[in-house]
Image (tube, rainbow, N blue to C red; front, side, top):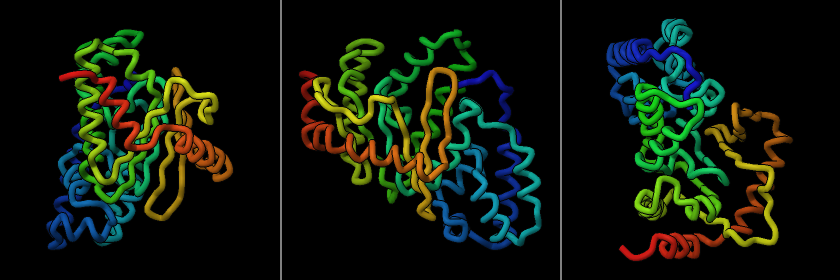
Amino acid sequence: MVDGEPESSDSLRTFGAVVQGLREHAGLSREEFGRRVRFSRHTVASVELGRRMPDAAFVERAEEALGNTGALRRAAGCLARQPGLAAWFRRWAGLEASAITLYTYECRLVPGLLQTEAYARTLFTNQLPPLDDGQIEAQWAARAERQRLLGELPNTAFGFILEEGLFLRRMGGAEITRNLIDHMLEISRLRNVEIQIMPQVRETHAGLDGPMQLLETPDNRWFAYCEGQRGGLFISDSKEVSVLQRRYARMRSQALTLDDSVSLLQRMRGAP
């Protein structure tokens, strides 16, 4: 998702260097600092290396852990927006880094967290207006960075409900689809990931209003995100989030079980 805004990683690297300098001056290892700010050591490293846009919680907790000098708050105000992510998605992407629960329902395409590079590049090259090579590279770099969440957040519960038609479409061709399914089967073996397939033939369906994402923060607040053709909607109102939670819960009962979903993916993949 690129919205044509200027890209800059210099400010991210500078902010990360400030965090690292203050952390080391305080005599804290990344792991010790991570415990204080309630983020993983991997997330701390990503911020310090300029690979991840810090969210507001990270900045505030880092300030408290490193002396409340105000330096990090001022530096955060100068951060350029994260390359490769649309403006409307950045707030959500920031919350993902510390989420304890992430649920996704998709009916249009395989979610970014589960995509292979070949599948993702197929999507990028099919966008209209067309993207140039630099934009495609920025898109993939941002998506690959987000995918690190699956490995960096082993205590986060990830749930995905995906329509069977996403694989029947064979976006990019049969070989890309087979590799995508292989990737999905591998991810489904992770203890903190659940993948369910919504069958093509289904007489009742609670998700007919479209895709959704639900997220729970470490302080047990829930948020939702819904995306359309040209923008996204970040939802914080608890009543609206509750409606989407109920719909997602109903879809979990309507989709195939975890084992049956794996079996269906294996059948769709076909022989090696």
